[in-house]
Length: 312
Image (cartoon, rainbow, N blue to C red):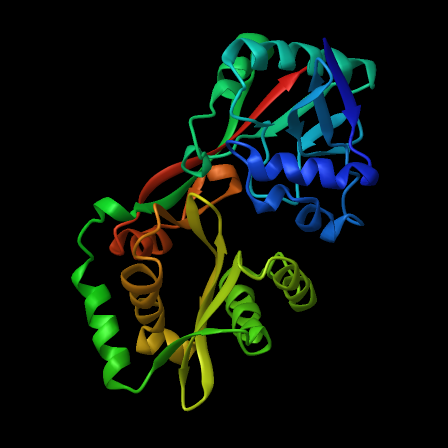
């Protein structure tokens, strides 16, 4: 028997414990992360029980008659435990679709968890999207990832950047100086894309306090000044670059090369995957070739972030 319930705050401990033991969940699905921006989204997450036991979670928010894999998350598909089988997930989607129709929903937008984040294989949901939902692919962004045990050789100009920093007194450090990095990030995003970071300084500070081992900042300094940095999200399978940015001086000195030399060849040389993040815009229709060139110069190769859609 399948029982579907809307998530309620009193279920936070049960939800978080399931995420921690799931085969494809990360700390982004922890309610302490998801709920930092609860004022921006009408949460409509589901908890799915089979025979009285929690079987799956669906992080989501509602926009009118559309259910969306949570807009505040980079990915957000069905989170399942190690015991989830293909037939059970198919039955789950049949039940969830019927439940959503009863809730007056008419359409679903679904962001699958990229496979590199799976602790064990967990693509039963993709089969169910085909078999049950007749879902169509509506967006595909490309990210650049490194499988660290099988790293590719770096481009020569990345090595040039490392030497340039070394010769100009640039020091790379693991830091807590978000106040020093955030103006660099904000200025660079505004100049390059006319955009602001997804997180404000206050929000990233809050999340860092809640997940001190999962959210890390590396900065490059010269004469005490922050010239660039990167914010990392550390999950069981993947270290992900959430933000990468440098000032004009930092770009001239190639500080990003030095930062990632420290990270990829030093502190996280033994991680399984390193994900530089997406280099696309407009749901994948626009490829930022200069951005992906930089990531591929470190040995990154393509991993897709897919969005699906179906009618109920």
